[in-house]
Image 1 (spheres, rainbow, N blue to C red):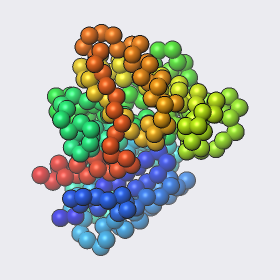
Image 2: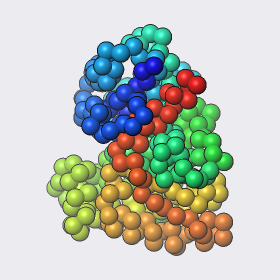
Image 3: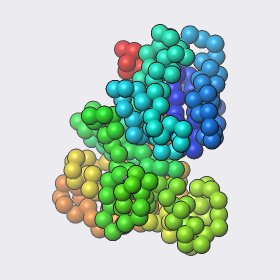
Length: 296
Ligand SMILES: [Zn+2]
């Protein structure tokens, strides 16, 4: 039985063959290509399969997705914005394989629950801050999928005190402040001349003013958003991952302050935010859980 996991990230594509103990070196990872995204996914999947007959495939994708139709339309992949039938394309590639699609945040939540910081917790919110914001909710031990597969889109929850324009067409969404692409846009508008999210995070870590302020706004907005979600769903643990979560005190200090300021209602006053222990493997691990859950 050969099971593969495919990650559609905000800046990368990755694939791996699921094994008892997946090592980061086994992951095939490439920067997000400007075009022919599926052709690149196909090459990664063939490499990962190592010539074996594939029986299962789990796919983690940013939203919006249509889980029933097997279609994804992530904003970060221009040629898929009108909708790409990824499940059908994967089924053509591996006839007979069980293909399952999940929102990236849903996959992350499954990974944290099975292997990460939420193994002992039945109620948890997982958030990953990278080029975009991915989040997933576990309630009573069940990962919440929602009506269309898009539950957990904390990215488009509104954050009081912010009015930034969001790529979804709205204003004041968490992603418009805490998504990596939005942070870069904001920093450039303030005169910062750097290029990539990695550069911005490195500069924030050593206290360069504008990058640190961009990351600080992300921390404040994330803190406010998770307090609202905790009040709604009654969890006391948030697991935070993704490259932005590694920006150190520039992110964690304002985040902690926002929680201290707003988590006053007694049911949320014990709210804790902990770093994800899964590094860059969370999405693939979650996609693997999704594929294996279906095979059972
Ligand atoms: Zn939005």
